[in-house]
Structure formats: C-alpha cells, structure tokens
Length: 314
Ligand code: ING
Image (cartoon, rainbow, N blue to C red; front, side, top):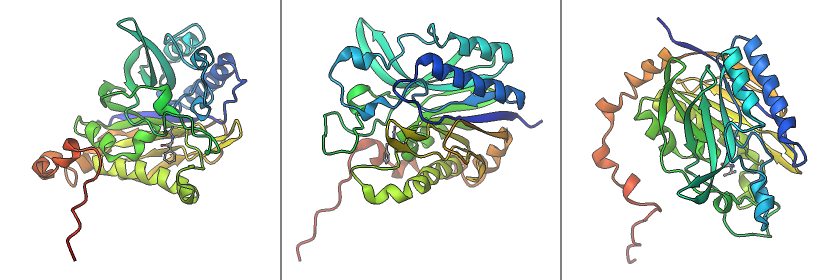
C-alpha cells in the first residue's frame, strides 16, 4: 500500500527587523491552518523562520545579537505552534537561530527541528555548511556573517516519521552533493530544507542572474541522485532592503518539480508525495550497494580543498 505524505511547503515573504516574534508566529499559524484545511500532514517552513536574516549585519553588541536567538524551543512565543500542531494533527519543520548552553558554555547554531503530528519534537539538525565570512567586510553591499554568528553542526541525521525516512538540511547545505548522499546512505525518502538566499552574491555578482537556476539545479540533482523527495522552502522578497529569491519547490525522486510557489510572499505549495516512488530509483539506477565504488572515493573525506597536479615542466 502506498505511503503518501501530504506536504505543504510554506514559503514566507520578508521578515523585517521590526516584526516581533508574535507577528511572525501569527503568519506561521495561518500557514498551519491553511495547510490543515488542504488536508496536509506536514508543513515545511524556511530557514531562520522566526526572524529577519540577521547575519546580513555586522553587530558587536552581544545583547543586540542575542535577541535573534531562541534559548528554548518551544519557548513562550513558539509554544502555540506546537499546541496547534498537536490539535490539528499536523507536523512541521522549523528553522531558527538556537542559543544552547552546553557544559555551561553558550553555543549558537543555525538550527532546524522536525515536529510530529502529535506536536512533539522528532529531531534536531544544526547547519553543517556555514557560508559567508566571520569578519566585517565593509566592501560588501550587505554582510553574510554566518561563520561568525553560528557554530557548525557535524552530522546529517535521518528520522523515522510521517511513514518514512525523513532528513533535514539548511540553505547552503543544499549546494553540496555530500549533504544529500550522507542522508541517502541512511535511506532518506524525503529531505526537508529551508533557505534564505539573496539574489546578489557579493563575491560573485556574475552568478546573480543564475541564482534561481542554481537553486533548483542543486535540489533537483540531490533528489534524483539519491532517489529522495526534496522540499525546499524560501524566505523570499525584499527583506531589510535585501532582495531574496523565492523558488519554493517540492521535488520528486525523479528530480521533477511537482509543486512550486509563484510569488515572493507567504504562499503554500502543496503536493501528495508517494514515498514508494523512491524505490524506483533506489532499487535501480541508484542502487548504492550494487553500483557505488567507495574504494574510489577516498578523497571526498580525506581532503578539504582541491589539490590539482603539479604543472609539468614545458
Ligand atoms: N544563503 C545562501 C545560500 O547558500 C549563498 C548563501 C548565496 C551562497 C548565493 C552561494 C551563492 O543559498 C544561506 N543562508 O546559506
């Protein structure tokens, strides 16, 4: 019997710095209710879905910075999301800035959680690939200080939930094939990921016109090459003067986009996802156990940067 997950990709338009947690949670609740009306089981929100994308600014005041993080999840302002999820029987993926205290030390992560239809946390993921830089770079039109404001996570996990094997990732993770493969090697059937992607990439402005193409390219490739569904959800639109791409999509294991948002505001894209479609790829073209050659892949984990051959003397 097919295992269907009714998924709502819940794109958010801009969140301005002046928008309170209460303002934003009201928007998330509206998405939960609309998704429930449409018969959905799972709602996927973007990366950093509770605040504006604050790594775009250089901040020195710790208190100013800490205001963007959640010290508890659920906390006083987010508890209603969990209670509503349980009442409606609808789970969700939520990206947020996490401030954790580990062995008495404050740690800051770019985090996502998966919450089941009972309103309980199933799993937590901390962003592995932190893009950008860690020092103030005034030449940029805007900063991208994720390497300064977050510590990296160190693993890609999967969880049994919603009738299948669910994985999580965040934003820049989607550009790295290793992200999908590590979860594919754990049998992932649906990978959820939120993103905040500016149209303009200061170090490479020549890529700006291709930002949407690259967004879909990497998620479609990751889905096909690992026989998994991929749900990519944007925080989109002009946020504090910075234009961010939309392109929210639900992508089948074939690599085809089966549902997408067409605006840059709060919008739901919905699909009835058959998890059994994954097997059509996992048991044939991407039958890892039959076809992969790990003995040839050593460089992938033994080195970080590329090492081209020494030039041959002319
Ligand atoms: N944002 C961007 C992303 O990977 C970026 C950073 C933009 C990298 C454009 C490369 C090109 O989509 C986050 N938050 O990772």
